[in-house]
Length: 506
Image (tube, rainbow, N blue to C red; front, top):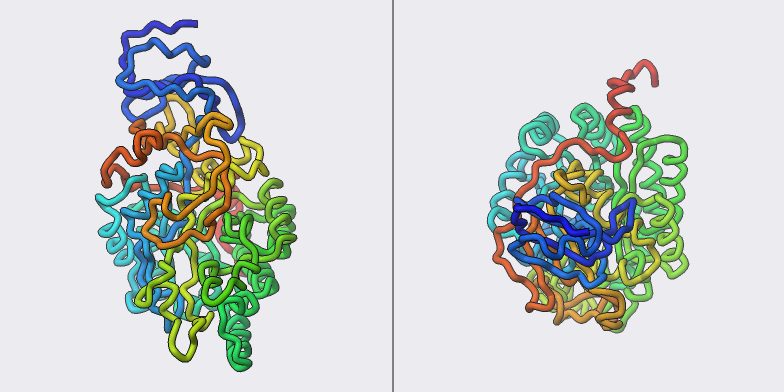
């Protein structure tokens, strides 16, 4: 079949195997004015007029990755007494993202308790991101103070600013909300169709356990895991689900789930019809608590919250990712340099504590660039499931679909990742020297992968060409994307049908 047309396309991709969340097929794609405009049988677009033609050589062509849990250029607000600050700026973080096949990130605009306004936090974060990004981007508003002004501004965030998601914490003294505050947030979020992300760990018990461990002289990085046993995550997860049910089944997303017991509580709520979504991350699929027990201070490289669990827990998390308990696989990219005494992991190292104090180790790992290659190379997800959890579901969940996370002609942005044909690269190890973040280590050093994004295409423009040296564009190509209500599973249609909270019906 030969298609004849006078149209000159901006880009044509031939001989690829296209994979979406629902289908796999051998198709050529034509792109014009930043959109996918034509899908045709493989090989049929080889001779059309185009400014550029990419021969995928049988490699997989997928929607670009949507990483919906990313921390960039944030102040030191998470751990009281710690000076840890994000290593990656919006420039370096999104640079790393496109090198790993991502075309959209949704990161955080953090409200600090010293400022009551959410809009102030949003403006500050806009100022950091604008003109500096290699990917398209959006924001979640991180709420640390549920004052009257902040709650009133939720309506403006959604209707005027295109921010349709918020995040709250059940831990970290500087951010932790009490149950009554959480209920106030959920009530307002329900009213304005804003999705609430919840970091579910029991902060009060965590602090108590930390004090007990330190009283016994246990300060090393490995004790971070002991201070956060699985029951803390499972209890807080169950409590978050209960609070959401009280506010007439308000939709929530439980982030970075690591514990199978927490996952089972989520699964039970989903089975009962409650609109509960969940997320997990590569650190819970590829790392274990044994990594925290590496010699000296090396274990600090693996300190994140919740901590990695056991190998048995890993397998259970893979099962929950495959069976739909987890809606999305995000990176939770929260980068701190390791060998940095002023703003990195070693801020807690002193003469008195040569292996640091685990309570003050900045919590978080770099992972935005390795998320897709690790999951893709694992071969533990069907290709359609891989696209679903790494791109499409995130786009649906956060009001980006079908502009993002899809390959629908005439509708979807031409955001694509093209992989190498199978076995063309061969197995090779990840090294920090090959990555594009501004961090001096990767927790996946030496772990072998079988493929890597060959091309990353943002709105029809090639931004990453691995064979041509990597980045082939300048910062600033990324645009802020205003988002609407979630389209995943008709969760807001159910809320609209059920109407406002009736306290007399409780």
